[in-house]
Each structure stands twice: as C-alpha cells, then as structure tokens.
Length: 83
Image (cartoon, rainbow, N blue to C red; front, side, top):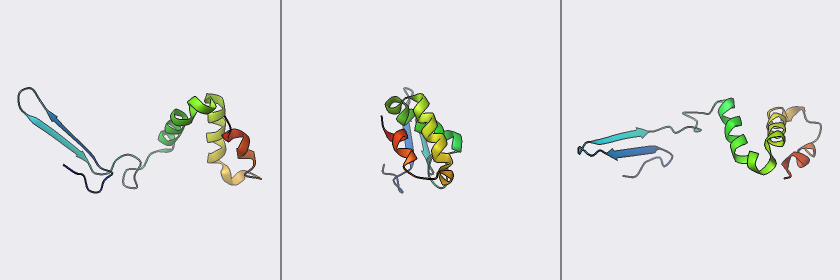
C-alpha cells in the first residue's frame, strides 16, 4: 500500500485472531494541514540539538531564534551555533 501524498502515515495491524486493523493519517504532524505548536517545535529542536550543543546553549539558541528580528546582527548567532 503506497500513500499519496507521500507524507501520510499508514498503519496496519494483523491480530492473532485474524482481524486486520488499519489507520491512515492524511495530514501528519508538522504539515500545513496539521501544524506543530510552538511548544512542539521547541521540544523537537531541543531533542535534535540538545545532545550536540548542550541543553543550556540549545535553550538560548531557540530563544534567540524566536526573537530573530530583534537581533542587531546575525553574527550573534555564530557562537550559539558552534558546539
């Protein structure tokens, strides 16, 4: 079974009693039809970069990105992006 569009989620389970359960999520999390909340985005970012930059630095980077328009220079991001 191939999902179209490709960013769908399809799960099929065959139970011991022979029943087949199916579920299709047409708009997976993080797509325009099922967007992530700001809290979800932060949590995912911390999960992805926390092990590389450390929790404190990752938190500062995330906070800085949320207020990017207030930065006087993008160069201030450089130190936050270095492990």
